[in-house]
Image: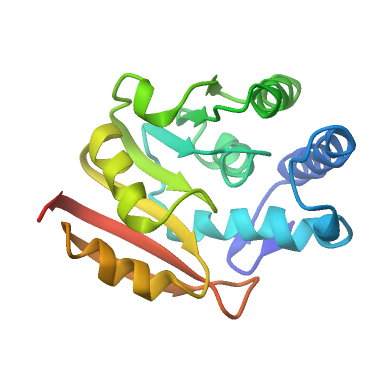
Length: 203
């Protein structure tokens, strides 16, 4: 079944995504996981917006770390996809908000995902040595690269969706960091891009 162009999944995976959507909408009534104005367009604004990262990500990473996971975007959505395509990939979701981290733990358990949730601040946890780092709507790119520098393994990839300020953030980050970057147009927002950061080093 098609999630988006280039990403076909089994019926089981599609149903897991639908189950996750139902859980998030239910919890959103008491915890602000996503803006209420986006509920009616939840599938596109949150599921597909997260799933599109899959098409530019490594196929079989060992360990994926998602920072500021919030309502599970993109971390839990990607964990659902990787359960089908790379079941040995494990995910660590970092979310300091206790209520949101409780949702993440509950959803991961109900969906049978290989996910660890850390309810702490990113800078407080031990280095994760992750092959892939992601974050959606968490911080400016220079700050995200500082987190990536701490928690990434050698040759790790950073995957960061960004809005209109994305190119400016790349320019700003290059004042502090040396890195290679590829950009991809968002499939859900004409003003947004996905940035793939590689070979990160101090400038």
